[in-house]
Length: 234
Image (cartoon, rainbow, N blue to C red; front, side, top):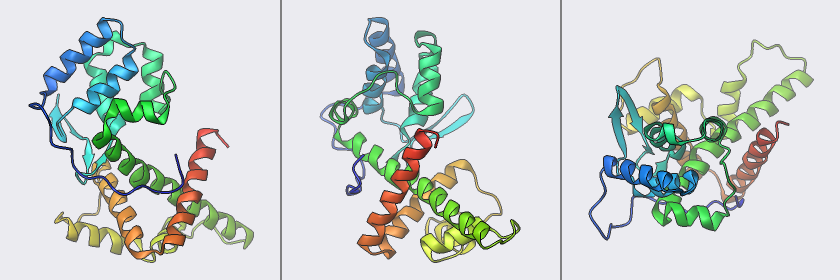
């Protein structure tokens, strides 16, 4: 991924044909894999054709588009893999879903072509708005902890709250309250995984709005470096 963050992509382009239903997408995916097409490219093509932003399937709520802009593509991949589970190599499937490791390497252009421009834009929104934002938090939190260890400060201090202050200039409770008020969500002492992703994406956009470009670029580089270190287990 390039260090320069692309502009946010919202929505899908106007379809040139009627949208496929979920069952039609899954049926086509089964046919492609059964016919000998490598399952990973077939999966990405299925993600391109998938029209549902969210659904309830077998009692579980799936929200594939965060804030209607950011594609949680691994969640959608999980849903599709479940539908064709008996056709997939278990180890390859688990490597993708649990560790983000695809069974074959694609170039950026190949990946983009399979997903399509609109979905690829939404994929980038999720990558920078959630994955990179989470990595930035981890990087800054580790900086805080190292500083405190050097200063001999005890563990009772809250590194997470200090991290929020350093990145966003405001404490987490105030930010979460503002997010819920802006998105018309009820105030609560708990937060679901789905809402946490929405909150993280909101924080990303909040940071872009309030930080200068040099700071945003510096933070992005720091987060990408953190992601790289996590990928290599450093």
